[in-house]
Length: 488
Image 1: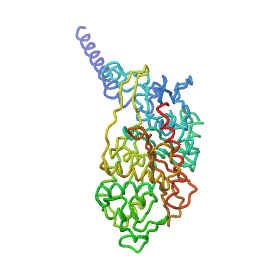
Image 2 (image 1 turned 120 degrees about the vertical axis):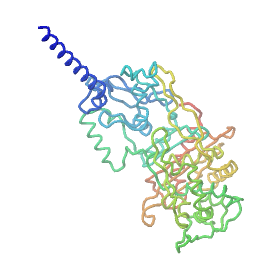
Image 3 (image 1 turned 135 degrees about the vertical axis):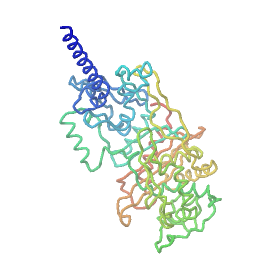
């Protein structure tokens, strides 16, 4: 009898050990796989069980949460959704997250360890904290001015504080309401389908995710390279660039759209946007030095984050002389985002030093305690200070005496550069109107803002100064808002 009891006890111990092994297998070894299984809805239910943290502009929340009393309880809401969509992105129960909603998801969802009371607290307890707040660098007055000035036309505006890299405005038009995508209903699916099928592509963030041929706005980069390489030592001295200029190795003549460009000085060429002079200077500088300067401004950087990823602006690394001539006036394969061209203007305004652009000022707990703060940092130095000072003067002349007159602000130092990016077969496609600029109060130590504007559907003549008619007034509206002070 004792023998049978012993056998039964051993069998029970074996069964108990098997249960323990299986529990370890399920709860430890397979925990991640089971947690991430599409059939497991618990993480999804937990994610939407509490209100999401908010994205803040100035002192105002531009996001919120709505209690649906459904299984996925809280949906994201947006205040002035189309205005701030290029900043916030969307947080959808069906389609995931984009832009700040994506890059700052840990803070907003309450899972980031920075919000925990103790290190590794969330991992050990498998809990989450109340969603935190993400405070942006955006100034509402600039964002509103840019959005209103674009007036629904296809295009974008990016504005920076030159000395710090703070992004003050980021507008893409036409826009959309991210709140349409927040839930999981049939209406959300229909809105997703409709937005993606719309020809104007309202969900495309043109300010940071779309590249355009920069046209004559790129001539600032070429001028910086020519001055730093000492291809030009006196900006007011005549050059030897003839009008028309024959592209090297070809019989193709590069024309100008304005008179007086034959052997014009660099100063005149920037003021009135002479293609011949700038193309000739680019060839003289050479591919190596042109490429180095362009990359110092940020071109070809696929790793730029603000913190959302920015499409890489491009300047080809391998070109023939004729292609380099065209690239030096912002044509051929040269392409840039509006943010990149705002960086070009900011580098000039900031004395040759380019600050790294950033969109998030700080992250806080729901109660307002800061857990992470951004610090301005240098990105690159694309030109020496003397070159920057010379370019400042030439950009001021372009506004006061050249094609950028519509950006002028009384009593304010404004520097600018117009541009029309021609593209398509034989330049037959509708041109893009560009304007890049910066503004500084007369009594200020440094410029307050640098701006880049591109208008896709500009009703412009195909000439070099149409950016002054279509894009310059938009830039002016943003600069005026920036100069009104720090009120948000």
